[in-house]
Image (cartoon, rainbow, N blue to C red; front, top):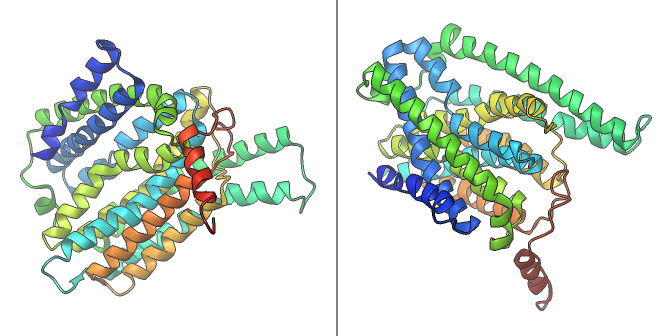
Length: 387
């Protein structure tokens, strides 16, 4: 019901942009909120098609379109030339799904229960895959650092930038190939390992195919419209709120793009199906690393704003590398308690706080001055006793 009520922000954002000509801040806020229920309707449409298409094809559709709203939002931010914000959004999605999404699910599912148990074999398979994918994502950054420090014959900055892009493209192609093999592995050859819950019960009564397709197409088009509004108002909103575009990407845009997954994981955990909730949260993180990020690298070349996978901030690298370690520690014993949910959310909040005070200098943000309010708050805190 709440999701449906939020749909009012879709026409409201359009009126504010094209009729009232409201300040970008209001357009940004209403468009961001409008994307949340649209992403949920995209999920429902996909699940409706999946229910008709059968378990294998349905699973393929659910996995492939699971992050479509986030991908569309990131593409429009790319079109606006904010490559650093898109990379921040990738980082935010990885830590958001694995820490905030899973933490909320564990905490919600623990009310009235001392502990919850799940199939640790399937969860550990996902966690192990996450380790390998994170290593692939940080490889371009390690390569860039190695070249810059002169451990080998260091190229000049222009040549290194091109090499970073070529390596990122190569990593992107390899990850997409692994994604295709992963579909075969999880949906065909080892489907019994990853079927943590009954599919029919998970999706509920199937919609007619025509309705599902109509809902998916309509929601996708509207998400694209709202994403264009968000990208157009991003920098003005950053200045108005005193927040860096980097912070908006890594926290706000990442949460908006994955909010439907947070709701889904929390819903199933509350019903005592923590195994499915873990699968949604960890699977969403894998989806970002295995498909969303590589696709964005490839798409960036076609739209004239090439983006590499070099995460220049050590803080981003720390956050990304920490995710598989935390997920492994949570899934190792096959059970969760409410305090583990609290710890997951706490780690996310601490990282978000660090990102708030970060002053990124990655490409794409160099021309965007630090917002005055943000800089003022930093200066105020540093002048406090002991600061």
